[in-house]
Length: 456
Ligand SMILES: Cc1ncc(COP(=O)(O)O)c(C=O)c1O
Image (cartoon, rainbow, N blue to C red; front, side, top):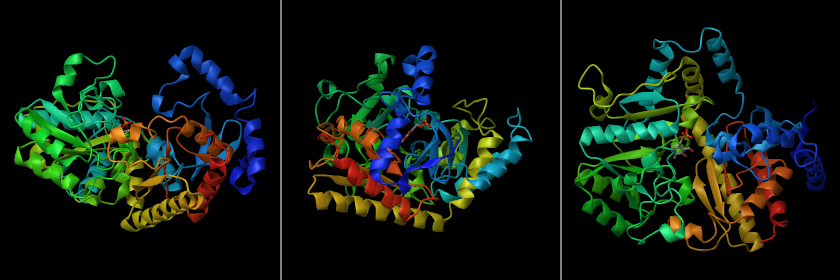
């Protein structure tokens, strides 16, 4: 099937093509979704990629472009939710993985690749002396929390209201509480997800992002029970609102004061620098959780930290945390991770992050030129624009508009029609190394014409 390349056509033609394909009555995506809905609840197996009225089914991807099952091509600014830093089907990753697959994909023995990827990561992340692999970021967060509990002999964790850390019961607490569940602004309530035992709430201390005194006080008052504080230095769930100057340092200081471990959740933000996001933000945590880009496009997770803390997993010593997993460190994922990490040199990060600066600056300029209240968050290769002029400081300040507005779903469809893949939940996206200014410009141009169509 021939591939239709959107970004080379005028906006009107693009819309016409897109309407005829993905949203047309006989669209293959529509048919697939009807079949999916019969055998999967909601026709979906991953809520984070749900799209109304139905998803676009992917056929293939190469570089920064994805072709859907109708044969339409778009520039991918989501990259499997930030996990593909080299874009799709990178030739080096593909050939290394293909070679590896032909030699067998999983064994009841370790394979040399796990040693190499562990060495590569420990060599880059300043606070990681030892590391263990698992299969998702959620597992990585869970393992970090368990390690902290075992190491400190305490049971509670602290986390930020609105922050997403995957689907472990404790990490999910107050990930998306409704306004009537919030409680005090300085002492947010602990809200468990449906299906989670209510007792979990009492073991999670919820903190308000960027509120110095409230955090200091919450940490102090739970100091004897807190095993760890989990923090993503630039949390997507809190709109990538940057930590205020000194905020992460305060968390480091207060946790260290009481022997509470600081866990940096770098699953998404590890792509910010060669040394990871904790380093980019200038903090030295005790443990980190990793995922996404380190698997080079395959399922992955990892927990890492100092030798002393990681010793809780050491079965040759005083083992405290059991850690199995049939596909942990499988050589296919490890191979893809090695090839990806090798390509992500300091120079590759500099180039990608400079492109991120360029895109954020262009976005800020179009909002300014249009006199539109908006603010552009993000850093490095990550961007998130809020179509709101309100002061954004924490989760609650986002809820007035940025977290709930249906305008983002509409905008996503406008962008899809113009050949751009963007989240339906915000002007959120990321860059990949095959991109250049041409793709960033295509994004900005598509956004400009999409904004004129919105019913805001
Ligand atoms: C910060 C953060 N932590 C944890 C996770 C969970 O990772 P996974 O989806 O691989 O389970 C995610 C996923 O988006 C994330 O963004």
